[in-house]
Image 1 (cartoon, rainbow, N blue to C red):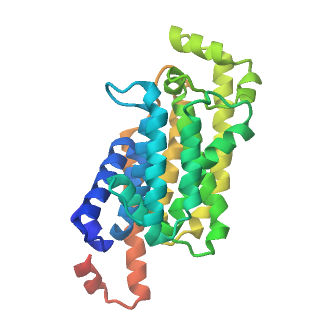
Image 2 (spheres, helix red, strand yellow; image 1 turned 180 degrees about the vertical axis):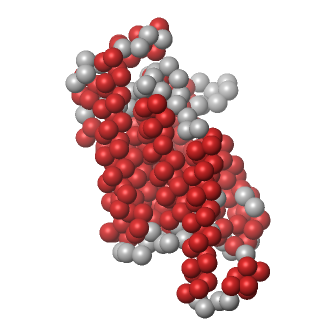
Image 3 (cartoon, rainbow, N blue to C red; image 1 turned 120 degrees about the vertical axis):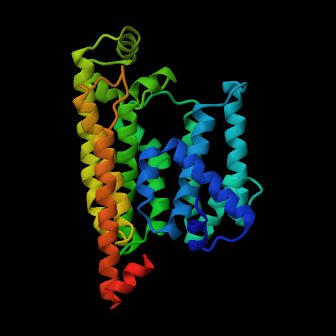
Length: 325
């Protein structure tokens, strides 16, 4: 995290600055698509986003990657310890644990409801024991804590031009759309961890079950039934993006380029999966670098246009705006 971002956010305490910097590194390492989009936010809002997503990445690491030399059995105690630190940090507004320190500070500054963090930790805890979901309704209950609350936590940071409760359903839907996209792209990797996040009834409608997925993953042989199920999952996900789309115009104009860019980039993953023939059990589909760069440049152009428009509304002369930028 640059000193400019921290200075813009009014974060001066050295320990707190270090905590936010640590969260930024976590977000940059694990969330390349969203990290790229975050660069389009005003500098003063970026530290809060890195705190929220850095914390989520850290918890996710405990669940999925216990670490070298740490047995999987240690995941539950580690996650419970994190939950206790988080609860204490949110109550006190500070913590000796850097990631909790940053997220507690963000929650206090932006008035983020503590129940969202509790719901998130509950979903992380369920990942230790739940390995599949019979229906979409079952999966949706999990995704409320693992994805929807991320959108809800972000709303106070992004700002809205309508009451937050009006924008909230769309923000929650966007978080779910992002996660469903990841679930589809990562079917093979999740299967190797023993988990299937696509609803069992959706798979069964095409004659697909865990055994068939495992066979295809292990042998490298494609099966048309799996392709049809993945197409169905992609269409389900596109429907959730449609639910989320109206929320983009409800955001503070300075935040829209960031979220619109993330929206376009994540939705493009679905296109990449389709272009790969839904071979998600055999390779990880990626958005071409050229398309990622073009989308990011488009976002930068919208940021620049927004700043010019804001300057005009404020009556600031054009040459002054150029010197200040």
